[in-house]
Image (cartoon, rainbow, N blue to C red; front, side, top):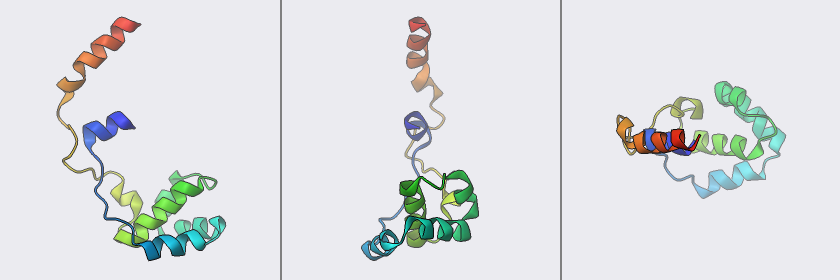
Length: 99
């Protein structure tokens, strides 16, 4: 995940308003999961029902930004090193020698 973030960059998201965060955190985890399944079924299908932190974060992003988090998942900014495969060559060579 860290290497992917370095190469592809991260999706830029605005900060979550405090009122949205407080409202969602006041909900029962089962309620939040049901809401996520209704509002973004694709993200709910990827996240485990027991992963309350990620379910909460997906809802926070959904409520704060509008687009479904599942649609944002593939949209990385230009902050990463995409197209810079040569940056990883020394690491790959060192990893092969270690084997």
